[in-house]
Image (tube, rainbow, N blue to C red):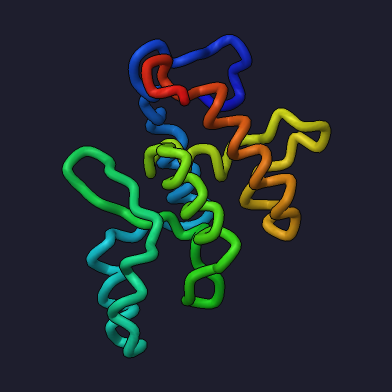
Length: 138
């Protein structure tokens, strides 16, 4: 998906392969949105869920664990997610981008270089421009 240089969505964003969800689940966890909401309610911050990265798999809504650090939201991930939403990159596609190697020299995954926000923000824009369905390009 994001790493394939010859793939372009013609009309719709590409579906996220199941192995991406499995890798997120294994490396970071993939709790249900309800479980994460319960966590934040127990911390006295029920409004926190408004900012959550949510993904939609089958009939379920999940929240990738890479957005959490020490049980709280990790701000760099939420800033990138906000940018993805402004670029009209779907939730699921953003989550897959976060765990896929960047085409830049380092081949690092965004989730591994959250201290490099300038690089990540420009990479996200480039990703959106490259993979956005043709009729949705601005």
